[in-house]
Amino acid sequence: MDFAQSALTLFTLIAMVVTFFVALIPFIPGPTILWAISLLYAILTGFQEVTWVSMILISLLALLALTSSFWLPLLGMNGSDMSCSSAVGTLVGGLAGTFLIPIPILGTLLGAIGGAVVLEVIRARSMNTAVKAGVFALDTYLKGMFIEAGINLAIIGIFYASIIV
Image 1 (cartoon, rainbow, N blue to C red):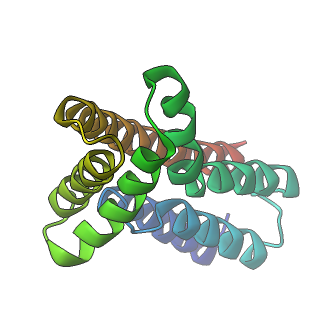
Image 2 (cartoon, helix red, strand yellow):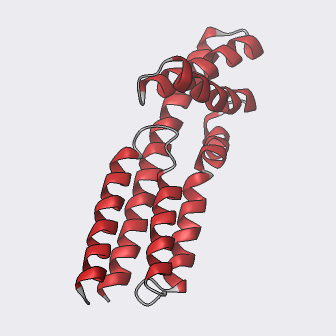
Image 3 (cartoon, rainbow, N blue to C red):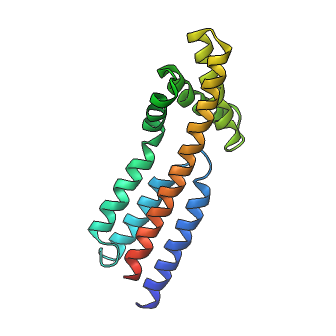
């Protein structure tokens, strides 16, 4: 490995680590950024170190992480007896909270909980059901963050394994 390739590899790994931490801020597409960094590195090195197989795995993981905010509430909804409006409220409220309360993570979390609670109060007219929806939103949000962080680590791991093998 010559100096230029070593420098490229080091820069890429640093960019991936920085992306991992920046992606903890809601609505920063960490998996997409990691995927783009991996693809750019693979193209620049002629897919010699990061192979097509590695890129396919990284792409599938990125797709899984990017869609988690859609499928995770639906999976959790079945086990918690929550309505579809809780899932919609969580998603819409989280998005609104991100922009209306511009404090990273906190705004999204409060918006998600608020959205689920408001829609459940409108739907069920029960504060007990609305509180359960808020807990559901909190649980779903935290699980989503952990899933995305885990997938981001897996993407970095696959990339790293590709370049050292």
